[in-house]
Image (tube, rainbow, N blue to C red; front, side, top):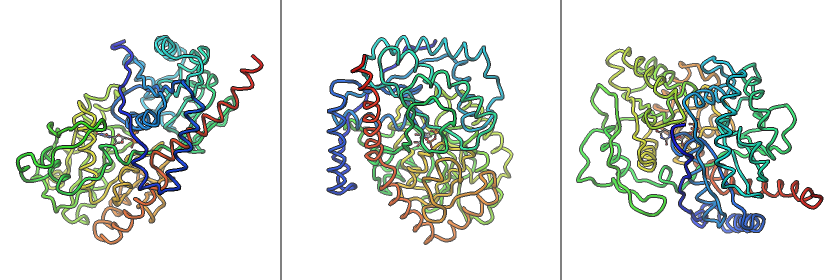
Length: 486
Ligand code: UDP
């Protein structure tokens, strides 16, 4: 293995900041949930375990979920497991299959089981050396499921949270569940983002449906005025004009210290950089085939004559910066190849952006600026467990065009909070939806306002924390009788 197990450092965050959003009653309710959790856990630790501290939705969410857990007085800690390239290739395969896709088409047979078990065992040794009996361990996604048996054996309460899923059962999905099942049967509970993702086989003692949330106050989602968004975009190379004396490039980090946007983005662009008044269609995603960045490009290019002077920005993490996503570089290269084949006049209006990943918060403030500047935020995923980028855009009041797949269907109601594509592969319908919103700005504004209200009531951190406390209660009730009889 290339590196040791990392413990990620977390900054405590206070739920008090939610008071204006929750109102007096909502804030009191939240406080009483927090007090219940403190009493229940006493001095036990809540561990979260996943496979990367940066890049992708889970890492994004854990940063602030753990921050609020700590801020509420819980002892919450985050461990990142280790693996070799073969392990991550295999877990990416499982990831795709849980979406009902074949991924790289490789096997999930005895050899893969052995490899998965060997890496899991090494990671389990490290985790069990710090976890104490009674601690709660939340394992995230397929990379960590193999730790469940050893952790249970060590006396921990083991929860597996699956952030992906498909509600259409096919051979690929069944194969992934068969692979994971022997490990998951050792958990005390499993958490899914939507009911349709729960596998039908029995053996899971408790199932909870907890949709993910975003943090309204994180660097990625905090309020940002136009001048700041434009300054940041100018600095990273996405907007025309010079940044005046580095104005508006400062931001406040989660830990309260000050940060500054120093790095630039790596941008593939041929034409003139757009000025601030040019409408921009944006998709921010990992370079993953299921995000269909190429399809976004195609939909935009095919309808370009109906899109006025709009530009398209496809932004993702610098592919060298995300260790658990070996496919990223290949997908990015295939987007570049497609981009090179675009007619020159279209290519001039399409920007492929790799955002620096060295500093997660610098990356986040760039994403914030890009999403806020967008006339339209697209999420044309072919599959999506639950699109955090969609919630981020909703919270920012953007007009959204997204695929009616997976959790996105719970996030957006078509024509109320955005426009949904019934067929995610229909690039023509995608282009038409862009064209409609670019022409009908009143509609775009109305959808954006509705989206923001919905995000505020359904997809922010307090709701997630309260559901998590309910889960703890449920587990504890199951555990207590055993303790007495044992
Ligand atoms: N993201 C980011 N920087 C990037 C690209 C993506 O911070 O360069 C974030 C994005 O803002 C979102 C997360 O990564 O918070 C992606 O989560 P989502 O649920 O949309 O997709 P996932 O990557 O988990 O499949």
